[in-house]
Image (tube, rainbow, N blue to C red; front, top):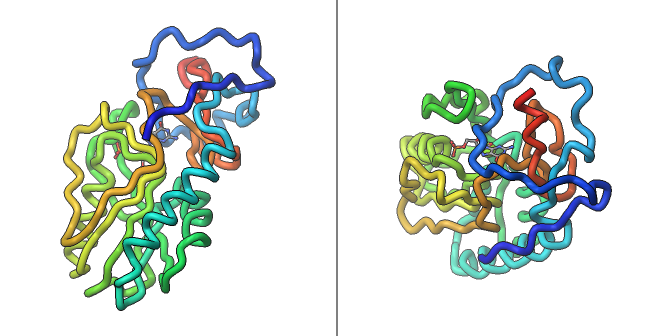
Length: 225
Ligand code: 5GP
Ligand code: MG
């Protein structure tokens, strides 16, 4: 999927473009109390994917997945990775025309502060029994691949028939771990994302910005000051 042209946030017409792409990522688990003045749309440098870009792409993904599931005899389990995938999975599943069940899993990783170290912990487990089921793991963004790899191994140990991945965004340039699917699983991805720290459409910084209907690049000064 090719990247749409980068659009300026209409409220930020005068903002200068980012000069350095490879700024270190912010601390993903920064305390909410340190961000009382944050969380507004003016903190967004540029919009990468608009609401209509997203709606169109999610609809196309749902069509593709529905088509792939049409011969599946059993209900497929869509597992959203909380919290970041909550909007994506909600938009996706309402367009899937096949019997499915929906559940959530929560994974947390601890690292140096600039990226996941791979020490991933499942902090909220599934309710649905996935043994012998086909699972579609729905994730907001694949970065190093460590979180997804851990979740896939976890599901494999539960005896799933297959694991597919449906990632809203993919940053292949940042991959450190190959994401290995299970059985007949497929990898679906919404958009390829350039190496910026992005927020919106479920994705946060310090638990803020998840409610933005678009995906934008967070101004680096929001996490470097
Ligand atoms: P991983 O490095 O394990 O592939 O990604 C771990 C998690 O970090 C992702 O599931 C996502 O929640 C978060 N993450 C990675 N890149 C970004 C980003 O650009 N923005 C936001 N908000 N979260 C990110
Ligand atoms: Mg995530």
